[in-house]
Length: 252
Image (cartoon, rainbow, N blue to C red):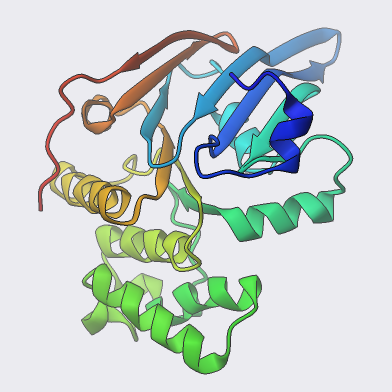
């Protein structure tokens, strides 16, 4: 655990964790009932990890994932992304800039834009990110489509793709801007076992070859077996944090 949060936000080093959470609590008020969706979370996630958050519904997985992803902010405590404090003194727009620059998202419902082709859905992430010419964006988008084996589907819209192909496009959209971190909320929930296996293998490949940090939330025991680190939550608290000594081999 980093002993000096101010120093963590001031300097980013290659050895610094990509995610650092210090005493983070998230409280929701529902009528007279106070709900502590996160209750004093401390967590450090290093670069290149392949980690899953597990626990029953209501354990705090999604809230923790949303706070890491700058989609929500803790009521108290601090969250650092790539060495930057994203909880203190940042506006919603500034948190959005961190999210856009550093983080890719994969959702169980895919969240693709239905009127855009596979190519356009992936390129759109680069257009939002900015900073590249049209030629650079086209080259990067085609590179990612090739990496995902989607070249022949690049001109198809989401309703013309299988569930597995749609999730590959979603992975491409998350990876195209070369984020430091990819967050995946139940990424295999709507997929059959073979498609799920293929996608897990693909994400493992991206993790191992590109060094991208992956953090999942999941109920899927099969996906858990592929993780190299398992963080268990219950009632908003971390109740277990262990290395998976024998993660299942990626394949496909």
